[in-house]
Length: 109
Length: 113
Image (cartoon, each protein chain N blue to C red):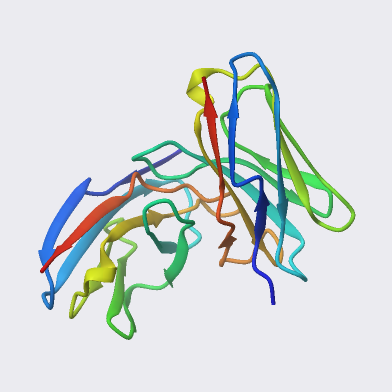
């Protein structure tokens, strides 16, 4: 089975750094994905980690620890447009995407 | 190049009716997946199709069915609609079932009254 947990809501200030955590339990593993979803829109791909460590992509970075079943998404220099839901997904190997409940991030001026 | 397209954008149906939602994948993508997203929750996997064959099915009742056509477009059908079927239905395409990156369409907002 698959169980993914994320905080429901987070609030941060424009220009700050925020870390969104994701923990997962799975019988298999095929990488850890992060998606961004603005209200009323489709999810868009942010990052994919299959090996332990930090993957950096501009203002966004994603970290994975397979032994701990833990990942985080780090957003730097927050902008108002970063207000969105952030979805963590950890599909078991050979199976289909299972998304976490999502973390709704509000960026305040 | 066009992204994933879905139709209709919005739909209002009555309990007991049936609905057909449509999806066209990105050109060259042969795999299509369907997800249901209830407000405030993450997407829940319904089906995956590849080369017109069902490759995966989520924990949804038999009222939900789908198919994929030779041009790789897909339809999701839901019969005997319930109020709880009200959700955003998302279609995602990928090159094949093993491709890690999925591209989502804008979704169809279904409201059941």
